[in-house]
Length: 130
Image (cartoon, rainbow, N blue to C red; front, side, top):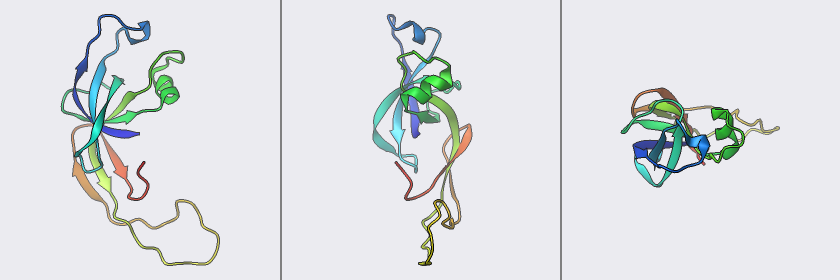
């Protein structure tokens, strides 16, 4: 998933039938702090997002089509949420402990919240960004 800011809509008079009655949004990609990271995506809106809002983008074709219930549609990216805030947790050094490593068992630091718009809260963990 990716963070983006809606900067406008895309209008086409001739398109695939799967885009009929759907809104296409032009979204600038953002880093977790809310600054533009370069690049953009055109996404199908599934939540009623508007210009200027920070959104959560699902940019994985098959998953996007499942969200929309359109298995054969030529859709890659869909807006799945409107973001209220991004919460970053600072990296915490863990002592070296012998024994098997358990995925996801590292302690987490205090949260830092950044308001970015309306909708749901997104939590970003340093070191796990893609």
